[in-house]
Length: 487
Image (cartoon, rainbow, N blue to C red; front, side, top):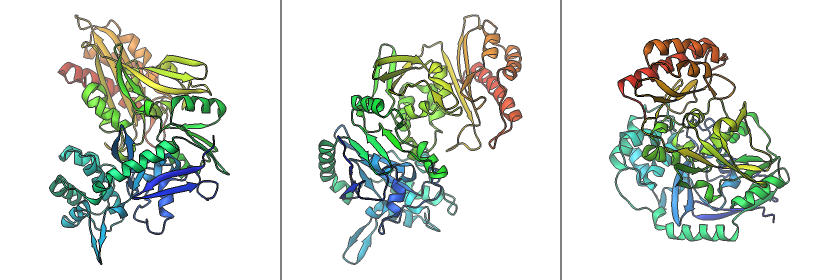
């Protein structure tokens, strides 16, 4: 049944948008929507691709009867995707009392420690720090860096902003937003109960927002041309930068069963809708080999929106997670109108930005096997900068040695060296059965030149990529020899 009316809370007011009676498209970004409102100009556009954080907002979602606060780049957030959620902007933080404006404690901390100069980026920083406070993240050097790594400032050098977080924002305090949480919860329950799904047929775009997996499969069969999104951090950039037109979108971000993490029969089962931030926390606690990569995966704002299923399905040759999924021999659960099937990760990706999903199928979950004690997993990402950057070359490796220090099993999965993530099969075959020694590693490095013919592009030359790929194998050897392997 069609439902063209989007409902959400904008700060403390319920908003309804009928897409048959507005110029907004369902895929209009939240940033552009806010910039069209005369009294909500604090959210800024700096880059329109999630790099600068000037457009940061806080999105509040009801999950298991709890309100979950997430900082998000509004330039990468489609308007229709916030159905049944609360959107908090910087204007909502301060309060007017009589003729006076009373700043929120987060804002006052920025004033106290001189955290603003030109002011353009300040609202984004304030919202990131506010999100940190509402999520009750412990304040320490690591968490401050992670919180602020998605916000750029050309003026302050960051220290005054970090000082504001360090000295004031660790304090426990209630605010007018906390006081209204009960009311907000009831309103969100009401919206999601009355309109659990959207099926928008606007004049220029179809936007499908199912709330159950069964509904999503049915919609995918009926709209086989639909573009699947689950966070839209990749698709939104293409819309913003190349003005790509999206006639039909199937947004699966509202399906709760895709966001679960379970254990089953020797595997961790992760729903395709698990966000990268959820996956980062999971890795820290249960799957250490991924931690080195998730620690430098984009920014918190992007990790709060992007999903592991989206990262895999885009099939990018420089996708951060894909080489690691190769190394741990992940399996993928796919479901469609004709039933379910399980495929190996290497069979899922079929070409440059192509996967094996049929027109009526969706990626439902990822199965990560428990790693045995004698399996070593290594990962390294080489990029221009440490945080918020895509890989130039990456390597994820799996290694099992015999009691005689010979190679029983090895996987060398490289990103950035071919049109897809690709294994260095000639180097692997050479090393199988060989002594794990520097001489053999250096011999194997020569085979990597036969495995790949990398391209030169804006990020790097082919000679650089070739040299780095060999050095990453040598680094694996040196770290394993020293006992420092990220298992």
